[in-house]
Image 1 (cartoon, helix red, strand yellow):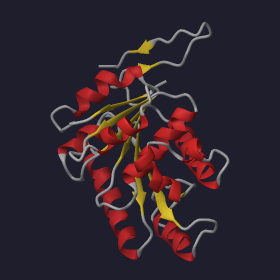
Image 2: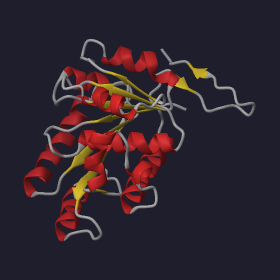
Image 3: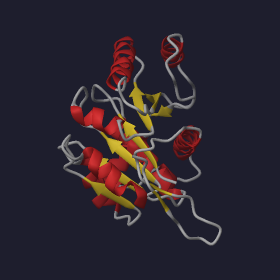
Length: 241
């Protein structure tokens, strides 16, 4: 089955692209093929994919508001997961990506100002989807936290978000050195230290993401790769008009 997840952030530094790439490496470790949609003119995903050299990861870069819907819908049924990295916020590329997504993930930092920005971002995401026939699920994930123990700041930040009934990941993504190395090596914690804490953290995030996706009513406009049949064959599911 194909799932489409878009990563959105209104400011840099929250770990949007790193979260996406770490997710990709864990999906590959589970044998799942992944399409990366790179809507950032800096082409970070395309550059990273070349470092990785993985036939199970394909990147479509140079994506703009003129073709982002078409690229997702035209290629989704060849992959288990489609991960979309948006460039910026409050633009038509964002709106078009949401219209063909199942899940939108908003990475968030913990400072007072970052939490205020996350609340505003969440509101803007919902506003942009208000007129869509199918609205994707939206979840906030706390990123780049201190390792080993949850700080008082992390707990307070989560309280600030949950008290407003904003939908949260239960799992935080911590600030691991192996995630910094990912941009240089093309490989994630699961591949470099599969039994380490960083790999366990990424694994937990991805397991939660998959559980969320499997519980959703998926976007009917997206053609999908169906789950394998008992004989091992894979069919394609057509999108509904």
